[in-house]
Image (tube, rainbow, N blue to C red; front, side, top):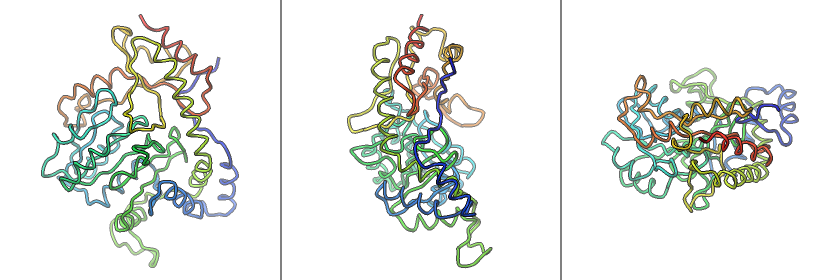
Length: 365
């Protein structure tokens, strides 16, 4: 049987038609699909300003620049997460400060953030891991009490909700990724959203080499090129049209996995608080060493030999001392060494889900 991939992009409607329109228009860099994608995204999120970027990492970079993050500043980041926000902080001369995460939701909490706040803290980065959403009411309240900005990293949680509000609309700025495995995709690409026009104007200027439209080749600031192409935005517009169907199918996949995995001893599923309505990016489970003494990495290899691609959890920064100055994070380290993420995409059918779970169950000792 063919390999079941860990993820794959799915195209549902007018992706090819819109890309062809962009090609024939000759507007393949900027163009009407970029403007439309930004407007459609802002409308969906219920915010006045949305700005495309070349990827989710540059979206975070633009947010940092808009908030004036610089050398000597500290940004607080969860220790179990994809570490783009930490890497960009280092590139800018800021210091990432890592928190523990909740052992059941695998997300950062206000309690752990509070321990990390210092006079140099400028921003908190809740990362909504795997489609879960951090407890944002407590985090936002804590941030406001210290006059600290909040940048939500929603790369893995677009369309997930917290108290019926979309992830990304709860903090100061929301950042998104449209990389090939994400909820919607443009191949590579990203977005920032904000309700603050000054932040939007600053990010727009940084994205465009620091140049205003009114005067070519005159730089107001030392900017970057973080622009999304019209071809990529065309894909994004087509994907946005299919969001209800994408959400429906991802929820079906999530429900199917939970139905099978909850019957297998030796596995722990990621938990979601009652306030969270998740749209899962990837299904992840923690393997009990007693049931899987061969270890997570061996299980990944065994699953591949059985025709199923899986991925490890994110490695805690405390395990990567060559790069991050991070004290021990026992909870993050345990999760990062025991979590395996399973194939997750909207066209994964129920028979494949059952097959994946059966194979995983068969590897227990």
